[in-house]
Length: 477
Ligand code: ATP
Ligand code: MN
Image (cartoon, rainbow, N blue to C red; front, side, top):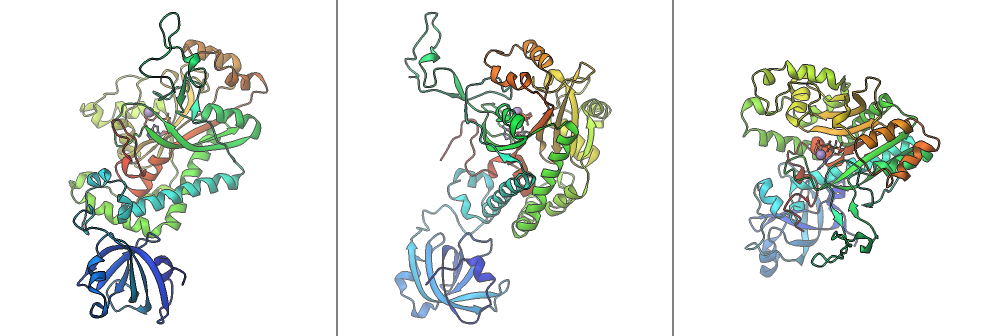
């Protein structure tokens, strides 16, 4: 007999037919009721055991976490909260689970505890929901771009360029750490390294993405990126996934439109295809927020927040306008910000971003035209000589979710900026070539995938939306 998933069973009309299901025991009550989960959906299926006619040895082995195969008849259930149940005819133990040693108990565990047993946390409802939503969002990203005719481009994970300018990098090397070859002047001789030069894990696929966009027109990347930044926050990972579209002949306006459309599309996809998971996560968040004082709780529940995001235009304003708002804001005047805003040119900290989004506009915000000094070399310079055509999208509870720009397509201006910033022009020849041979305006952005998953699931720590988080001092599993 072929196995049915529990999801399928839930949509089958029960009429006493025999079915085969397999799954893991969540609970076993009164030697009679097994609550079985096979991962196919959030709900558990109730299996009723005829304990008087079941081997004692089998009954003893039905414990939380054990894997079972059950053949039984599918009948309507009179129990509360379920429409069908299975009357077991035959139970086979596929894998035992010693209840004395199994860390997951049929009770609520803290997210911190579950993080320590990340190899088992998939078996909880919360992580079942989180990773289903993560999957749905990834699928929606590909669907969105595919339907628009974008090409999914695989940019390298190991890169030889060290001026992507997005943070500290992880070195890739096969040299002997204890006895590295040295050059005449005593420096490490990377010409003897695997690639014959210094190499690192990529911090962004953008530069390579631009090369392809200048021929294929519209591309996007969706892959892992690595940053050795020592920021132990609830928003940063050392290994995270990023989506980076790059579009030829697009300006900043087009770029903002594309980002807003993408975000709304994928959120809408999750609302439609993960309603069960999002309902569960909504309740989870409400429970979690009960511990907080009233003024720190969200005004909208998770699903309402996602719908709100869909139904409102993102607020668009310049960095200069934002600084003005921040300067005159209450927390700045009462010196409640950790970093006070006193002059134009300051980099915005997440407290400022969150003030703008959560307190001032109360909706997603797109900030544009940042000072060139706090942004990367490739951003297009404005006429004022001070700002560049950058855009950051700020989300409630998250802060920056997207960073992007219109790129500097004018060769002389790009070269001038690279010189000012002391970048190794020689090594970057391949990049500058795009501006030498048929340069054209183009624009793109990076969307941090885990920050998106964080927003949609209502989880609060980025470590809880990626299966095996890599953070400073932690690369378990
Ligand atoms: P932040 O200021 O929050 O560190 P950033 O300015 O360094 O972000 P970008 O270099 O613009 O970010 O990267 C593009 C996007 O990638 C960001 O908008 C964010 O969504 C995501 N991102 C950046 N760094 C991380 C990280 N360490 N972990 C997870 N996501 C990240
Ligand atoms: Mn950063």
